[in-house]
Image (cartoon, rainbow, N blue to C red; front, side, top):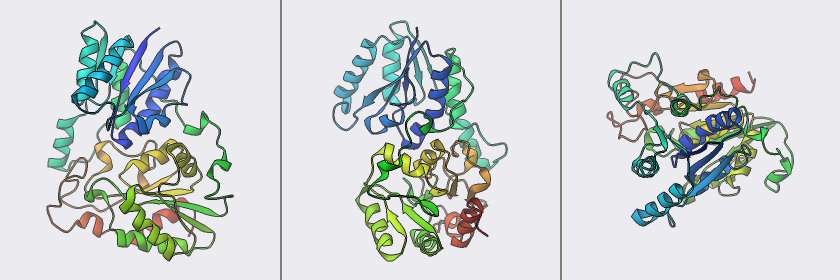
Length: 343
């Protein structure tokens, strides 16, 4: 029996994209055991996937913070006597952990993130063919160690009960169309102007039989979404009201989600909810598009300068964020209506 340590601590979207891969591998090798080392907050994504998948949570803010914390988690990993290490993160922390285990004679492999390919795409703007999807890059690491598998994952709620009552008291029944709106992302280059997103929320909220659910995190995001909830009918702000598993449950009932190039796109993908995604500084061809999402639902503007960054972290060279500003609320709503069959 193999004992495989799989390391991916962050970011949220990248961790979510590991779910279809680890499930598919574990399903093909039921005799083996797989342990995912990830941030404690992301653990629910893996805890109920399969009998042979476990989690080794990372508490990077307290218990495993700094050099002392790194030594502690490294010692725990080496003591667990893993036979293989699949490093799909390839950062300093994961390199130290995998090296410590490798020195004891165990088999180790790490991800090829395609940094040069991505750099070349950013420089040349050659978007066709698209680069490998992140899930493909993850699977390649398993294949190096002899754990290749076809992707058999479909839906997170294939493995745990999809109990609507867990959404009480936020909602008690589903009526009409439910649309999720997740307007935030980590970097400005990936965030559609909030005043335009508000226009979208206003229009959708007034459509017959439609309920709009707003998704965010943190104090500042909650302030914005609370103000929209108060202004418009049939709008519900879900920020900080659910844990991760219940948020996934809610998303699974959406008819469509509007999202940026952000973690929410990937969460919706895990529950087979179609996503209309808005792309600015980044581009789907870089390999971070939602798992099995329809590429026709990506809303973007063709500009000579985009994509300008892999993660959208760089300031706009034009100073005007035209890649986002040029997208009209009407075009986004048109995409949403197409998904939910409204003319």
